[in-house]
Amino acid sequence: MSIRTFIFSILLSHLLFDSQQCHLKLASAADGGRWKLLQTSIGISAMHMQLLRNDRVVIFDRTDFGKSNLSLPNGKCRNDPTEVALKLDCSAHSVEYDVSSNKFRALMVQTDVWCSSGAITPDGNLVQAGGFNDGERRVRVFSPCSSRDCDWQEIPNGLTARRWYATSHILPDGRQIIVGGRKQFNYEFIPKSVAANTFNLHFLLETNDFGAENNLYPFVFINVDGNLFIFANNRAILLDYVKHKVVKKYPTIPGGDPRSYPSTGSAVLLPLKNLKRAAIRVEVLICGGAPRRSFFQALRGNFIRALNTCARIAITDSNPQWVMETMPLARVMGDMILLPNGNVLLINGASSGSAGWEMGRNPALSPVLYRPDNKIGSRFKTQNPTTIPRMYHSSAVLLRDGRVLVGGSNPHAFYNFTSAFFPTELSLEAFSPAYLNAKFNSLRPKIVDPKSMSGFTYKKRITIQVVIKAEVAENSVSVTMVAPAFNTHSFSMNQRLIVLGDDKVTASGNSAYSIEVTTPRSRKLAPAGFYLLFVVHQDIPSQGIWVKLQELLSVKIKSRKDPTTTQHDAKEESRNQIAMAYAYDQCRLIL
Image (cartoon, rainbow, N blue to C red; front, side, top):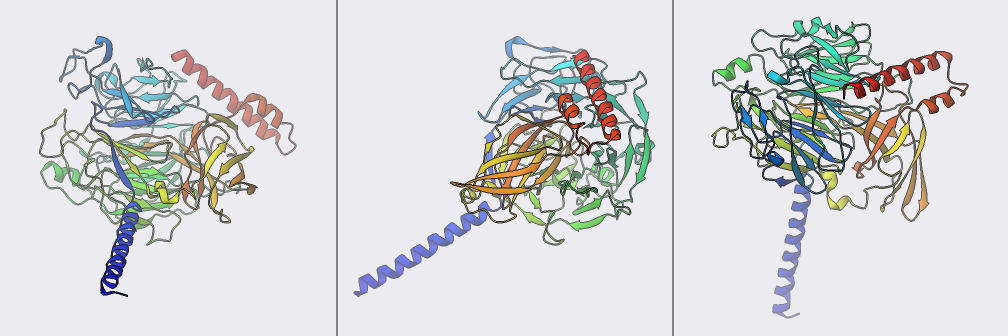
């Protein structure tokens, strides 16, 4: 070998080694997820978000921010002499974002939707409740459509009480419950069923800290027994909303620091599993927040470090206790998003201060992944950071393709694009978790059947056909259903993930597989409506498809012939069907 050839071979080996190192570094970076800017401006700040069944996202902020950067179409204007910022406003404060085309269009809200709540009805419409000033008793409805002319419809006096900073949750019978709000220590239902539609909830008065509140936007989840888990400040109850009775009180989170607005943490109902068991274990996870008196200190310009702990509790245990965990980053005003594979993404927010006007500092730019099935001490994994601070009034929602849409951030009383402290943010970006990395494409299932928008009934065995190019490992496939959530102020209302499991996986050749699963057994476990269905293989999810979980009268009549169906079950189902039909009729009557 000549000296020249020898030197060349050494240089080549170094080059190959360096290229491998470069590849490994890139792969390692991708393992922490990727960010992509989708829109530099949608004209408004994304304070509230809701994904709809047509893969469009309804976004809105508030009507009293002043003039937005997006005009209403066709010369439309909003005229409100009570507004301080702008009495005649021809700009939009709501948009519809089309995920597939990455385009958006202006929508028109008639009244102020600031700090409101919302939920999706069983037929897929967004029903949004409350707000500020002229919007505090309004109910608004947005029905998804394929055209570009559908818009908000508003129902005057749809609410009995003023609802500002309240929480909405869908109920098993199709109605919605609206819990709390500023100076509202009660709850009500929509549509209204009785004239006196408010019911006192002393728990909300007990958890109200003088001057700071710390109990707004309570965290609300439907338990599998049909009762309502309600968390406010630093503790929780289980409410029988039918009998208007508290049936269980949970202990205070160790340390006693508040987790509710304005000491804003976030919460999720962890994935519901083992659905065939008579007793299903239900766990709630609450992360972040602010130490007590952070709100008052921030008013004085002293921004205390946010909480760096999570509290987890099995709400179905006979003696439930909080288990504390430490996050890698302190976080206030963060969002918690359930991912299709059952992991939780903590995203957005700040690492010091409090929610409120210009009261947060030190943006938490790096998301954190929480893996609930790992052992304590190995559940958290820090992800790659964004470059855009998402402070007060930010939002995030899961999309059908597995990305997380992120927007908003306006910690100012009006639109402010020049502030030294986090100018109003009008952009949209997407975070792609590591499971979307192309290196996992061979593991990624592709759903072939059923088609999107298929309908399922309860307690029914179904077959899902998928294609998976890689070899399928034993016990590595599951099917999940995710309810689309209404996100605002660090809480995703109605967020729910149900693991259907894998009763049987059968190979049928040419990388095709059939997966047999059983749908949820009741509306208490999974309220009727639209869900995103995913097939997950080795933690890598497919793209989702929309499915509608429903209960048809004809199906139930047939099921009553089943000898395993008791007379009590039949009577209960009959009552439920009547209640749901009444609720739907009331909605149609209102609209």
